[in-house]
Amino acid sequence: MKDILTFKTMITPVIIQVIFWVGVLFVVISGIYGLFHNEILSGIFLIILGPLAIRVSCELLILFFRINATLTEIRNNIH
Image (cartoon, rainbow, N blue to C red; front, top):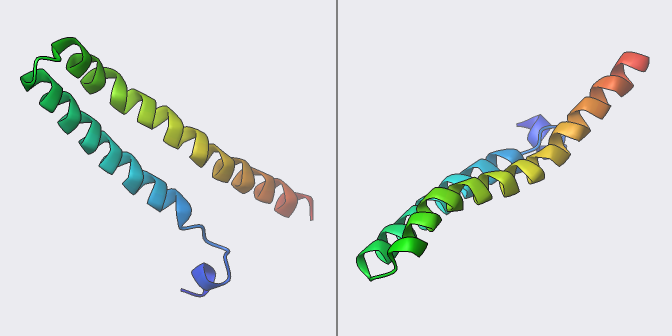
């Protein structure tokens, strides 16, 4: 708990993972809705490409945290 309160442990990567799964659920449900409302092609594309787009977006956000962790390791190894 101390690490969270002193910002040594990041909680944002966990939140980004939750956002990813909520986004995937929303996109798949929207695609299924499109399939049943005469938007078959867009529904299929949404089901296939939607989760991929959300994954790439979330990975780009998490990349900043990975860069920070790597730089912190390098700094700790130098000292």
